[in-house]
Length: 216
Image (cartoon, rainbow, N blue to C red; front, side, top):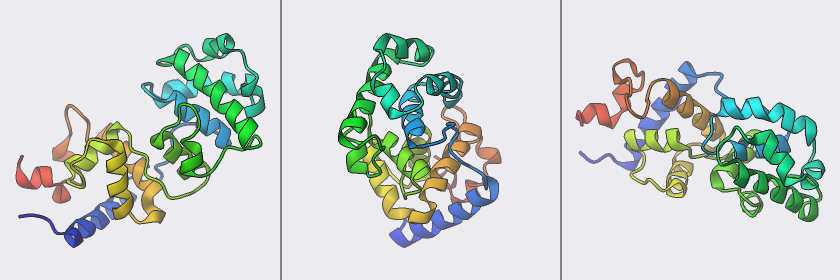
């Protein structure tokens, strides 16, 4: 039987309560002290684990502590600092280019709107959402592979396009819950609802999972 919009909302609220119970301290796993550091770390995290980024960034931030320092950096030197992360050559170019743009167009301050952040080189909606939610405390849905996969499994979207998933979930999840919800779902995706072998038998969300209810 097709789920009504209200039924979907009610199911989501039950899931939010369970996630709060099981992941009360879920937070961004990237280490940062300010918006500049989170912006850099999030750009580096593409196609690389957060753990790997956290290994690289202390030395990188010590060498380039501000936007102004990164804006004046030599490409080859930045590459050397981040060479153990995926597609590091492209990322090095983006780090310098975005820092120059922030310096020249935003007075050295990382912008705090989706529109402005996504104008920066190498910054898509997912990176912008991470920065908005975790550095500026604004409502945002950051759609990574874990989040998109689980939203489809849980029947909240059929889309694979991250922007469409983001739009649907922004309409469903209360603004004050959005950032925590993303972290909780990512935790769940890493520990229980894994891509290849989801541990459905031990999943505390099983009673509200259409995949399990339908048996498909």
